[in-house]
Image (cartoon, rainbow, N blue to C red; front, side, top):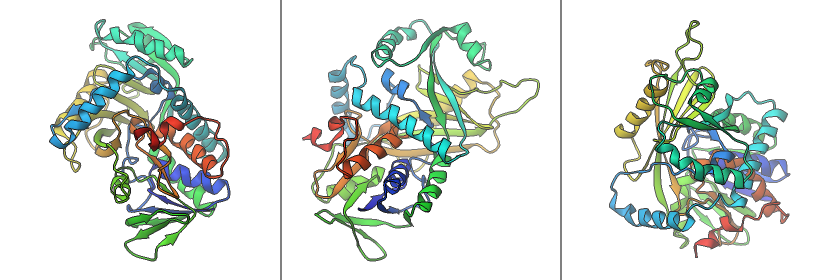
Length: 401
């Protein structure tokens, strides 16, 4: 089967590799200069099916864009309907499979990727910790390994935590992890190329033509006719689909990260985090990536896409100062902001689009890195008309009709 993939972020790269591994002819079209140049460039990096299962309510700042008011209302209604329910089993299974698949690929392909295991959720006050029982119930429902820790237990697990910052307790998710998404994507791109994947960079896809043999039309070059088109283009997917009447209720959510060199002092080996900690009062994560720390969060609805928001970046700097003061070097800091599409129910679209020959792998929200490998395997099985082993009907676009 000949498959065209639009987009070379984590969703596109993992899909390309898995399809090539199954013997398909794969063509990838990416308007950037390489893989993982958009929302996959410098994300917080969590591979966290346990955190998915816990379903904490992250702060989402609204920058007051009037066009997104309807989306905000729909998002609130979806949250009310969802209530205290556990993460849907199919979605959690996809996250678990994604984590397992990527572990296999790292091992079998001997990838050198910055990675640390363990995610520690931190609550500053007893009042804030009142939200923890609901998370613990969800973790137990999905049988996620976890440990409740008091303040001393949290500091024993992460010795660098600032003793002057209030800390009530936490929940440790030992099987969750964090890794360098762009580093992984670039390594997998080379392995996919060895399997015959054809990469087309600086390729602006103008439109797709659905049909029994759909085609991809680019700004420079002849249209490519294929057996299936898989759209993994993130925010670029909306206009391609809308041109065929598939107008979905997308919201544009921005996320921020700050990546900085870690101050290395022989007398103070634990200045920064050993793995990942998440401040549950703000939703900001702090992750060790080799000799650097990545601080992620500052999610906002609406606002401009170009430059990092001052308020959101300020929250990242404040969290780093609160938990690991003096750990980040000022020189060499990288500030990053990316846009991603999110539906009001916060579920991705993975499966048939409803347009003949066009498939979707988009809208993953903050758990795209977690689900990438699982979604790739699910779609490869579906395209081959095989049982994927996960009933992912709830992730099909047909749920929105």
